[in-house]
Length: 116
Image (cartoon, rainbow, N blue to C red; front, top):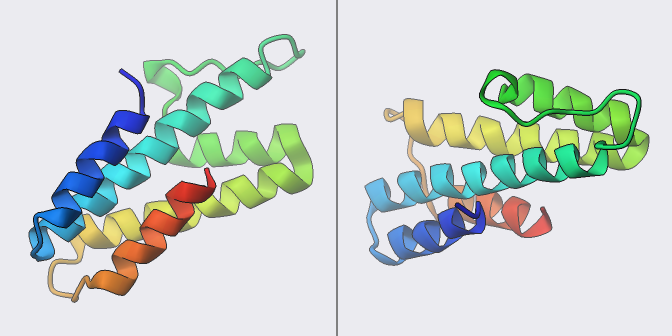
């Protein structure tokens, strides 16, 4: 499956309206970026002395962020920060149901994914 398909689902959920759709949309948008970043990092490091393998055992959020920073220094740190912030927003959407999750939160998530 292409991670971009999660973006199509995210757009559909957002269009459906309501807070539940917005929260779920944020999660799908984050996972589109997460999987894309993992696949891209694996391809980009394939010939290096320290290749990244995007397997079930290596799909941790923190590890992916750290490996981006390790392999690509400044640009990698920007991607690391992007993934970290998007992950925090996704967790807010999924776990902090007592806090409002509005259009601004969803737009933040979308803008981060558009950068990926």
